[in-house]
Length: 81
Image (cartoon, rainbow, N blue to C red; front, side, top):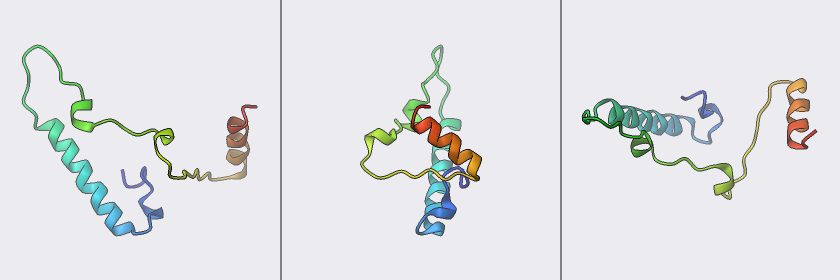
C-alpha cells in the first residue's frame, strides 16, 4: 500500500505513511471482523466507502513514468493516437 500510494513522494513521508497504515488496518479489520449475515452478502462498499475519481477533485494529478518509451506511449494515449 505504501508503494502504491507513493508515500516516498509525500511532503511529510512519515505522517502520510502512518495515516495510510492506520486507515488500511482499520478498513481491513472492519471487513474481517464483521459478523456473518444469513443468506445475503454485504457489499464491500459499505466498509470501504466510495472512491473519488480524478474528475471529482480540483487538485492537479501527476503521472510518473520510468523511461522514455513509457513517456511516448503515455503521450500517445493522452493524445488518442
